[in-house]
Length: 231
Image (cartoon, rainbow, N blue to C red; front, side, top):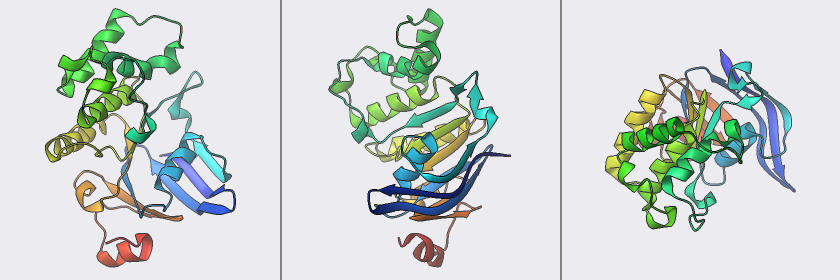
């Protein structure tokens, strides 16, 4: 069953066309890797699905992605979009993933704090729960942001370059974590490196202004050249 459908979607920034007449179906249980050249529209595609940029065309989200009007979509942005100078602790960042459920004024319950601690423990970083985010490494921050993205148990998890700032060891661990999460939720992951993600994802979409979806996790050199202009 399709949970996200894009039909003839175009996104423009002034006179510049970032995405043109794009079509894409994302199915329940998918683990889809989004690849393409820099400036090809990968992040724009994600923002369009999230509803944060204007577009023409049609985007349909399945009713299964909503619960009493609340969107069941988790999002891990690129770290460059997150202000690490903001005075907030690691566990508070994770708990902020519940704000769509609770609002900003309600206090967090003990069970919710325990859930946040358990997620941090699963990532191997429960020991830094009370540290300020400006004091932790880039790799640790990426794990914290992933915990924030999944604490509300989304049906769709969107990741924008999640392996940035992490070492090779955690990159491998991250893919193991995502494969386990994929048993519970659909995953869309943007990456600049098709060779590294191919072992994790189930399918690949090449984004270079238009979109070409492939229902496999491997692409030939010709397909990469024809659709993504990357090698």
